[in-house]
Length: 277
Image (cartoon, rainbow, N blue to C red; front, side):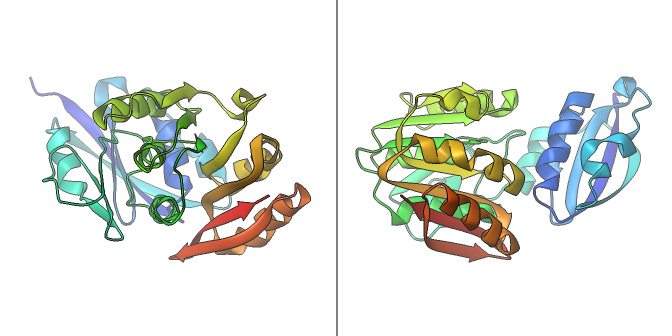
């Protein structure tokens, strides 16, 4: 007897951060596979595990800032790895960095990063991750102490380490991201990166030369005071995960805590900003 899955095809606007929130919420409900696409997300759950879930009650679906609709159908079991491989393409950042999956052919670049994202966010495909990687390429990380906050796959921490950072911490509140980061750290020969599961409460007493946080507007606004406290004098704070329209609110909050705007990158209305103290 064949195994039957339910496939949910979600149309999402704007895609981020709604897609990441939706994946997290669906994962808690028993959905086990996800494929992101240009219009939203395909999500899969065993038909036998479906428990009359009311998707309209999900936090992300009730948020007035997001427009989410969906259709569903029954399908027989597929090769999920093949589906994932078909939808995951290598990403080149400038001429110096490649982010690829284990099944992609290696190319000659300064920084070759191998990521198997599974359900985690952070492959370089999304504009915010791509811009954060570009910031790392553009700045000196040699001998620095670095924090990757909301690390997802750990890709930012890995590039920071490959660029010569001395001590690197990677933190994510999501257990799947924490586990995936540990796997990718090992996969890229960066075993001395320290990964933790938790939130900004873990930063008490910590000090860093560089802090990177690619999360979302609301969490960034909440955590900026913590980042400012943990940033060494003469340090740099890189923030992303928000839209160009949110720059004023983010910069105003940073200024309140002694963080000065230095420069930003923009891509498709997303923005990534460097602040210094």
